[in-house]
Length: 260
Ligand code: ADP
Image (cartoon, rainbow, N blue to C red):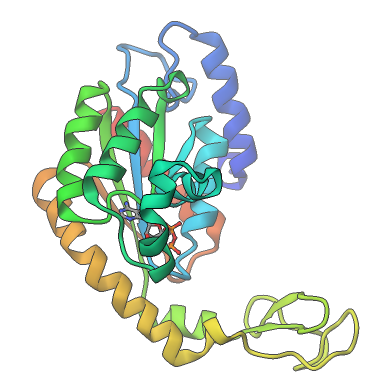
């Protein structure tokens, strides 16, 4: 079936056409079907552990929906770069890898989502990180006239560990390989310059395990919070499928929630 082969880029172009056809009711999730009522903009929160493919899925979503991705990490790093009062106040915490105060991130997000590019929805990246932020997020999103949709990329940790620990990098040219998905022509050797490949410090098994445990510790209370409070929690198994297949599942689920 033609539909089965649709790529995210094709999905995007179908979307663009429908948005052009119905400018008044333009919603990111109209897919060329008859529009019966305006659909509220969506505030999409994406949770996925390191190695779950969260970055790829966010890119697909941005491409498809034409809505901005709002990363609190990027916003905070901007303030540090600008050297303003906020930046000076958070430098030490950011360097130490600890969270910055809830009130500060809540306020940054509140201001950011009032901007006009968020009128049709937005994707929140790295926020909320604590239950207090999650509660505030629900208020902010409702205040913006949007519906929250929480997407949880569920992965089997053993799969992630083998995926991440299978990564190799060329220490000379930086090319990345993966023993499963992108093996070099000769095992352990860079295709481009013949240099022996190495395992990056970040990809060593005990480091990967530690990051996953930390992610789980931080994220589980948030998932529990949304299970209890949100009507739109989408859990997608992202362990085995190709990224485009995972995206197809996300897309279908989003189309369903938006037409509820
Ligand atoms: P990473 O995924 O590597 O943690 P981020 O860019 O999401 O990267 O965040 C970088 C840092 O910014 C965090 O370690 C934390 O100090 C701060 N930060 C980002 N988002 C939040 C948030 N929602 N609440 C508190 N601190 C945050």
